[in-house]
Length: 366
Image 1 (spheres, rainbow, N blue to C red):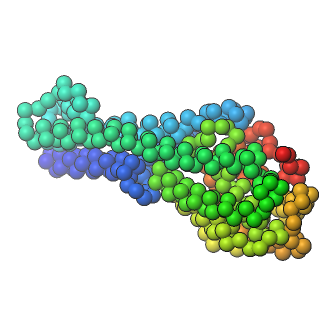
Image 2 (image 1 turned 180 degrees about the horizontal axis):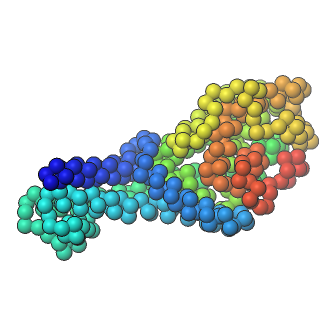
């Protein structure tokens, strides 16, 4: 009997400690750390949402449903932790001889929720009661402090996503972006833009691995997405370095590197598959050569100066794109963004969405 109580005590203490560290890694730890408990909560909730989405094929309605996924998952963490703490302390109280399992459960719930209707006259038990009440209050306080930090990062992310529509259209297109810079600003002004997005990628990488729920928070507008915005900027930088007749720009190259590192590290955090050392053309990309040449025709029709050797431009573009192609599409599958050219339009779930984005070779507007 003593051995059984000892095993129950140790298992219950382990449950309490693991639950506390799950909250600690979610709310306090200033680095990326995967919590298996959070994985189970969000994974179970994702399956429920996928069942619902199975019956919805209109994208605005799908987006409206998925907008609740991250907030609901985040709010479910607190009651999940409370239930596990209550069970853990129930086991501890049982192991040290606090009545029946019903008495132990009532004492645990009374302590955790700080209601205080169940008490004890023994000092060791009361110390445990105080520790449980402390954990309960800490969990609520951490969640309250966590939300402003997360929404501040969300606001920084969405500001750049919204501004991108001005230069890259909606849905965001690398072709549209280069054409508008060529007409309005001049291609030499792209350098400043690459620097801004290099900073954006670094911020997104840090915030979306530390505050992992941010990955699933959808933009305020159903037709915007941080994933498709990232893809459009990276494609524009890759096109400018491979096909546009301008001097090589270190800012564009650093932007691409910052972008694919950010996408890869977020993909790593969610254990999404991709080739970590791809080489083009041995590893193909999701853009075909015909699509690339159509894009060049569109750029040329818009007055953008192009390099004469299109075959070499294709090889150079593939050499840039291969670094982020798989990670980009994997994140599209994870987040289910609206359709956009050269990113979410070629993810396996894309056929369930409507309307489709404009073809890549359509004439630019505005």
